[in-house]
Image (tube, rainbow, N blue to C red; front, side, top):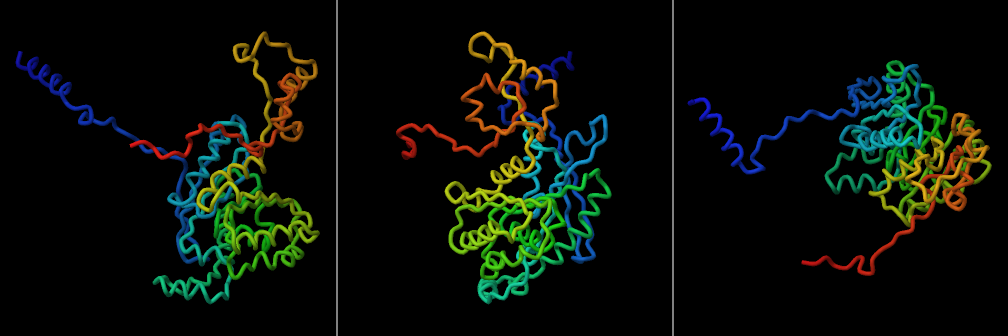
Length: 364
């Protein structure tokens, strides 16, 4: 009887507790990859290398090899997590290829990501703000590139199933490093993604020297995706010179895309959306318009054409997909239904509907 009394009392007490005071369910960590401390003889330091594997890496019936996306500023608290999120999105949506994501930690960014500078303003600024002046004029890019080439890439390729394709992505100073690496050592990576590169460095040196630097390298089989936000000033001026050089015969076999985002993004907002666009642009997966579900169609579903039925029997790959825009598909949906197509995702203007009072001060 005494035991029953205490059991009833405990239940009544629990019921009387405020909702916020009830016991919180136990949680568990969410893992998106593995983190490794890689000792570097070149840097004389240990760096964090973060790796996310595609979901199919462990589940595929036939073990396959994957391209690798190397992310500069890739520590856990830097840009690794949100780029790894894009990798997961690509797998879930089937909109671009699967790849291994590798984040490379940077520490002294102004030193590690830049070539030597002679601009006296940097040291003056550092000194005035109490910063270590010995790093003001950079100059560590060559060593950091050796670290990647001789230590990071061998570590990744020895321990994982890679297919030889490598992409380097970075934003701001890291994007300057991307462009610098392309011009200095293009064979190191297959594809280069530079998002709002810090073209101001050393009085716009890369923009000013782009034409001559492009002439001395072999860019066969290499691609560049470069974009600039609403930076203005010397950033845009140097970018304009770089793009002008890309448009000359000096660029040789280099395949490049430049996306001008000065009217849509600023320096702080550009990275994620531009990285998504870069992955869609460089590694697109095809798609079959239409749906076999009758309740999603207007009216009675019409049978597919003989050509569409035949197309469905052939694997839908990027190599054989027909290049069409969403506008073309939407104008003639019956014509394109079930065909293997490859539309340019995210590249059309996005119309927006807004109420007349949009932007008004919120009520109190």
